[in-house]
Each structure stands twice: as C-alpha cells, then as structure tokens.
Image (cartoon, rainbow, N blue to C red; front, side, top):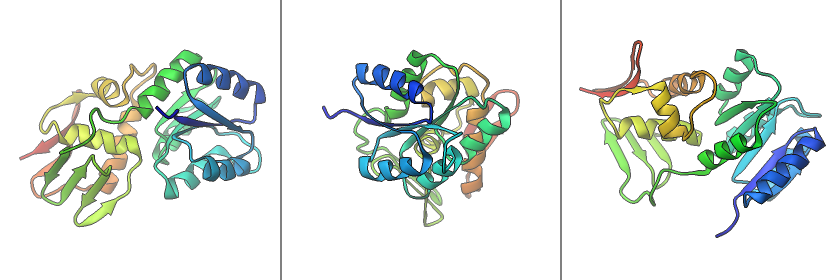
Length: 225
C-alpha cells in the first residue's frame, strides 16, 4: 500500500525533525518546510494527504497558508501552535482547519489525530448517498448538493453532516460526535463540534422538512419532520 504523505510546516527545525522521526516510524512519507511561502510551493509539488501547519511562520503565516489551501483543496489540515487562546482555535477551525493542537503535545496523541483525519468513512462508499428535499450528500464523491448547487466543504464538515444526516432525528452529544466523527476523545472542550455546526448552518439553511437542530443541554440532531 502506498504510504500516506504528510507535509510538516514549522519554522522550528528541531520540532520538524522530531515529528519526522515519529511519523516515519509510523509508516508515513514526510516532507518539511520552514517557511510559509516555500510551503505553498512544496504543497503543489508534493500533493500531501495531510498538512501539519504552524501558525507563526516566516514570509506567510499559517492562517494565510490555511486560507490558500482551502481555496482549491480539501487536504486535511491539523494546526500545531503555541497559541492556545479560544480566539486562535476558533478562527482556525472557522477557516477550515480539521483539527488544532496546542504545543507542547505528545507525539503519540498527534499520531492518533492524524490516523483519525486520514480515516475516511468506513467502506468503499458504494451506495452511501443520503438525500432529502434540496439536499444530497454523496460519499462516493465527497460532494454535497444543496438547492441545485455544489457546496464546497472541508472533509470533517462533510463527515459531520453525513453522520448526522444518515442518523436522522437521533440526538448526539458533542462528545459522541467527537468520538464517532473525529475518532478520538477530545482532550479539551467541544468547541470543535460547535464551530463545524456553525459552518454547516452558514452553508445549509435547511429544507422543506429538515433542519440542523440544537438540542439545548444535550447536543445536535438532523431533524426530519
């Protein structure tokens, strides 16, 4: 099986080398970049499956690199940063990051997060299409059609929508969604789920008989009437 490709973008060369050793031992193909502008060139040449992206970078910062990636690509992106304030985390998630880890972190936890991000919905996707009036979610193509238009979504947004829509009227807690969609027990709070739900609602305003609903004090559900 071809190795999954990971691009590490961090201006701390020591961190890059440590991560490279851990990730190579876990069977990944690795490239590194220590500069935001150079990282864009490496990205286009290397075509990674996942990017580990620091925020504070020379020439072009990580937030701008993330925006650049999301304009054209659905590559998985995990932000790695010493900036652990709520504003920084929420901003990165709202701009399309799939996950966010605050430095310092355990390499084993990072590897678990990477495996989770690279794990597509189980199975080959055959027949995995859910449809409602004005909405189709197609796992075969990772495509969402809403009101006749294709809607661009990062992978985790898509997978969260698919998980909720394929379990219509079932209420999920945030913790359940983190476990079942992200695939791990999130070590902090549940901002990740809330931000992704917010982004889904901005793109999908509901249909004649369905809506993304908040169940106050519990979590979320895809309600079909």
